[in-house]
Length: 91
Image (cartoon, rainbow, N blue to C red; front, top):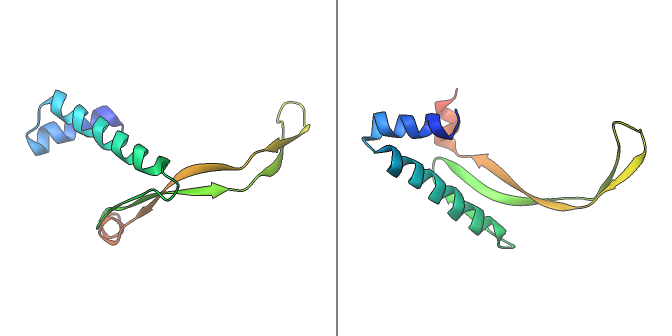
């Protein structure tokens, strides 16, 4: 499901307008992103899940075109851990 399909479901099932549905989705993503920018940022929605960041260690990889070794720096990336209710819904 992409953003437009999600907005469409919100319009159909939640009685929202397209403008409001898209605004809610965009606002939610912005708020979660801002919270995750903080060093210990974490957003928990009970039942749905938790958005947090993890730090990936630096590593060595290979350029797929040349086969040459390259250094991949450490980085912080977002991670989503589903909640119990969400897990039960997809069984």
